[in-house]
Image (cartoon, rainbow, N blue to C red; front, side, top):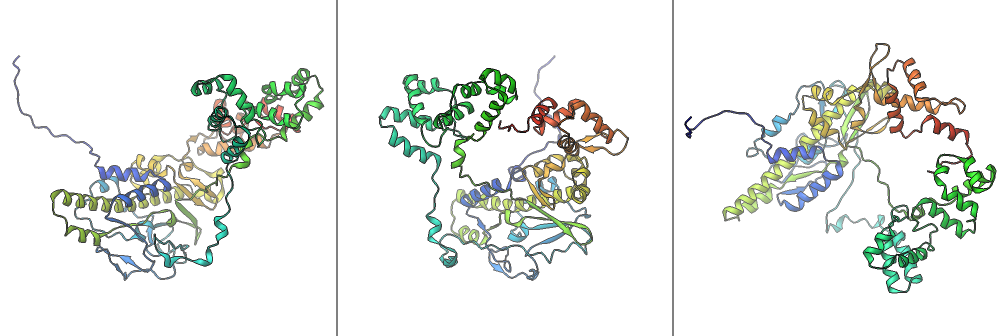
Length: 527
C-alpha cells in the first residue's frame, strides 16, 4: 500500500448560523423585560440607532427626516396598524431571515409598523380595528424641560419613604450592642437573614468564618433575638414561635414540649401531643390556636417589595360576528430607528480603513436589529393567532373544552419549525377575556378517551381532579383509585399513578392527609 497525497473536491450541505440569525433567534425567546434591556444596551453602544419618539402623525423615511406619510392613519385608530388575514399563506420563515441581504436593506421600517403588526381571526371585511384607540403616553428625554408638568408634581411625593427591615435592625444594633467585636458578629448574622426573617442553623460555620468562639456567636444571637420585630433571627419556625411566646410569658413546659414535637403537629397527631404535653385535647387545641395567632414570618411587616403585574405581549378581544381579534401589545414593544442622517454625516469625516469598517458594521447591526424586532413581532403574532384559532372552544366555553395541542400542530399551520414556536411561546403572555395566560399554557398532552371519543387535554384532567376533590364530603374522602373510577365514568382513561402525579403537582394532599385535615376543621394548617 502506497501512501501518497492527493486533491479531492467534495460537495456537502451544512447549516451555518450567522451572527445575525443567532441574534434573531435570541430575540425570539426573550421576554419583554429582557428585550427592553437588550435594546437599551444597543442604543447605548450603537450610535446609528435612535429611539423612535415620533408622534402618531409623523413617520421617518430612509433619510432619517420626519415626513408625512400619505397613508398615515386618521384619528380613528393607532398609526401603523396593519390587518393580517390569517387565512393567508404569506408567512416569513427562518430561511427567509437567513437569506436577507443586509447590503441592499434600507431603513424602511418606521417605528409604528415595527411595533404594531396585527392579526384578526375574522373575514377581511370584519377584521378592521379602526374603532380601537390605543392609550397614549408621553415620554420626554433627558433635558426636555418643556415636557415638565408642574400640575402633576408634588413635593410630598418625594418625602415618604418606608424604612427597610435592615435599617430597622441596624438602628437597634447600634443602640443595644456597643462592644465592637459583638457588633461585627451581629452585622454578619444580619446579612444571613432570609426574606422570612430567619437565619440558617450554621453557627459553627459563622464562628469559623469570623474567627471567634461559638459561645460568642450564640451570645450575640440571643441579643439579636430580643430585637423588634418579635421572632426575628430565629433558626426555624419553632424557635420563632418560642421567642414570641417568651415575650408574652406563655412559654410554659407544655408549650415547649409542643414546639419540640412540631412534626407531630404537622401530621395532626393530636392525641400523641396530648400525652406528651400532659394536657387534654381541648388544651392542645387552645395551644395551637394561640400559636396560630403568632407571626410566622416576622420580616413580612417590612416587606416593601412591589409586586409587578404580568404585562401581556398579546391582547385578544372579541370582535364582530363572534370572532376573536388578536393584536400585539404596543406598549411593551421597543421602537427604534436607524439614524441615517447621522450615518451620512459621520461617513464624510471618517478617513482610515478601521473607522470606515466600524461605521459600516454599526450601520449593518442597526439595520438588522430593526429588521429582527419586526420579525419577532410578526412571528409572535402569527403563533398567538394560530393558538387562538386552535383553542377557540376554550375561550368560548371554558377549560373543559381545552383541546390537546403540541408545538408541531402550530408549526405546521404557520409553516415554521417547532423550535421557533417553542422560543416564541417562552415567557410570552396573552391577555384574553378569560384572564392572562402564558402561551405555553395552551400546549397540553392528550389523555385518551375510554369511550373512543376525542382525547382530553391534560389541563382539563387536572381541572377535573381538583373539582372532584373540592366537592368531596369530609366523611367520604376520595382515594386515588376512586378518582380513577370517577374519571373513567366521565370518559377519561387514566392510570392511578398519573392521578397521583397530577394531584401532587397541584399540591393536593393524599386521601389520608385530607381525611385528618377535614376531620379537624377547627385546627388551622399553617405549614
